[in-house]
Image 1 (spheres, rainbow, N blue to C red):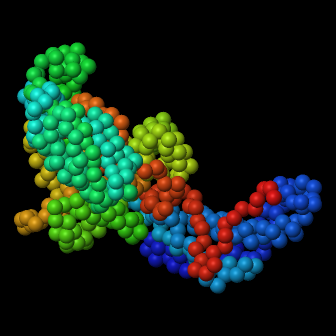
Image 2 (tube, helix red, strand yellow; image 1 turned 45 degrees about the vertical axis):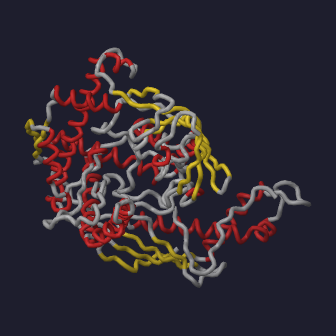
Image 3 (cartoon, rainbow, N blue to C red; image 1 turned 90 degrees about the horizontal axis):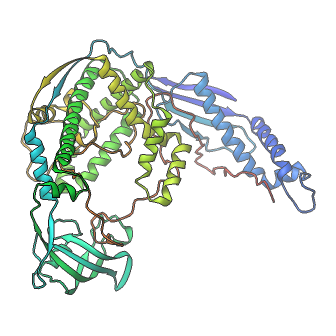
Length: 564
């Protein structure tokens, strides 16, 4: 194989590989010898099929395999010989005029990771804003909790349901007069006015009484999660079991016992722990931003454009999704477009910080243990149904890129914790309002701050002096500027710290398939069989699965059958 470097400019590299027909033929011969003992053909004893017959029957597939193997080996050799650290999956293209039996010319283009300067971490100084847990805060949480734990009592049979009441019903959903899967349920309890069901459903059960039977007409939203129901008109045959009215829950031992606890004091203790956890998370968010500010201010180096583009596309896709759910999507998207360049700058800074954190972690032996990785995989697998969990676990174990996506957020947090230990930290006690104001006042775009601290992400879009337009709410750039230390890829779902709206206990689920009229009732999709696009990495790329992309006829990558 011959290799010629055709581009070496900044972080971009390009090479032309020439794979000779002789090299390809050698691989075909080797493969024929390997599979010959396993090939079965009428008229020949096992293992005695002539090599020329095997080549005649499977030569095209064997040649295609040999070519792809040669290309992969060639790309890996170029990376190794030139000590390259690919930022993204290399682009590999087979010459359009390639013909079987001829030399193959392959173009390889890639961007490499920059040489990251050794980050200065010995002079880090941080202020830790702490918030003590006051009894008043716990009492407020307790009141909120009690108000959420409504004490439902059966209303008189003559009572007509109104907003704020709870209706318990059986239902059968139909489209074009035919019941659909997941559209039948029993004893589903719905609080009128909760907004839990699809538009129009709750409005039409106002006025029902226990024992009523009613048919309502609704239309599933265009963005409904179940593909077969999007935008469809449907009817629901309802049988009203009972109407219930709510009474206030008393804050006493009985309230705690209804949650399986021993006493009111135990419930207060749990709520105090929750408030303390919220405060700690806010404190960490503020500290992390200040830490990353210092790193960003002290380092400036070129980053691979492909990584920045991938990061920007991820940010933009999320913003577009959020804008589509605004009251005025067109106004929200228009405002986004006006700030496109700002978001590109956020993406670039995000990638640079990710590379810095990765460099710090590798230089100081920060690692994610196999035990921690197993726990991450198990947590992520819970988002799938029982039948898909094992498949997801196998997928992550077999796909390095998928594993890196899960590992990245934890790796980053561990690097940040390491830096906290190295920094000189001073403590200052503040109120929760002061801490939240400090977080909200920080301009993530201007200062280069980033955060993905679970529920406490804040809008880091560029701030403007002008007043906001009343036409539409600005789509929040949640997680739009967080660095990914080991791999700038999409963060996997993890259990977040309780937010101020969290309930200490979940309400019991409705019976049977009472999910069809619910806004987000579609089952979660199974994991994709294989990642469709390469993700940017913040350290030397692992062995890429490279496949040639000829513009003309692409050789089929079939394997020779073991038996015939």
